[in-house]
Every structure is written in structure tokens, then in C-alpha cells.
Amino acid sequence: MGARLAAEAQQELNKELVKGLVSIQLSFSIFESPCIRKIFNQIAPHFQWPHWRMIATTATQLYYEFKQKLMDKAGRLPNGTPLCASVNRWTTKDQAQSCFAIVLQWIDRMSYVFHKTLVAFEVSTTIFMRGEVIVK
Image (tube, one colour):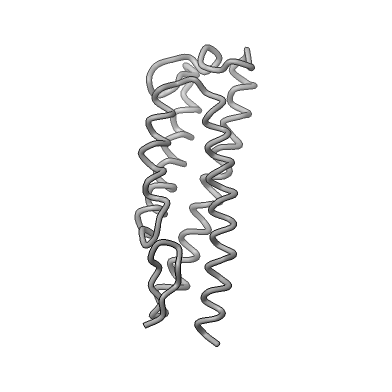
């Protein structure tokens, strides 16, 4: 019974992770900034099992880092490029920030999901490996 519930929970979480990753990737692809691409490429490999703690920490750090950079009064990306100049379809800083806000929401949501999952599964003896649930 416990193993079945754990497997169902894992499947639900997998769906959320895929949705989140696809959303973040699509949102990031809007930007032509090599810096943003580099950051995404650094995080992507960590979206595997059993890197829960790393993912939660990374997502939280990214959220605050992006928020801080975006709220920069100069309106520049971490590499110094003005937001409006780094976006193909948008011409104003406000429009670019609106798009980036979507990315921030996903990172924030995923961070919450990861932390919640960590607490739930650290209590149990369930181990996550490559997306499969193995019960000791």
C-alpha cells in the first residue's frame, strides 16, 4: 500500500516537473542572452533523481537571483545587456519583465514543490533513483 502511494505521488510529481521544465525552457528560449542559456544549461542536468536537495536549493537561489537582477534599476541582465535589447519580440523593458515574471513564478512554484516533497519523503524510507521509486 505504502509503495503504491509513493509510486503514485512520484508520477504526479514527475508530471509537475516536466510541465515546469518545459515552461522554463520555453520562457528562457525567448531570450537571446547567452547568460540565461548558460544558467539554464547549468540547472537542467540537476533535474534528475535523487538530487532533491540540490534542486530545491538551486531553484530558490535562482528565484532570488533573478528577482534581484530584474529589479535592478538599470534594467539589465546579469551579463549587462539591457532587457529590452535582449528580447526579439518585445521592445520595452516592461514587456520583457512581464515575460521574466512568468519564469520567476515557475521557479518559485517548483521550489515550493521540491521543498514539500523533500519533507514528505525524507520521513519515509523511499529512495528516488532515475525517476523510479524503490522501497527499501
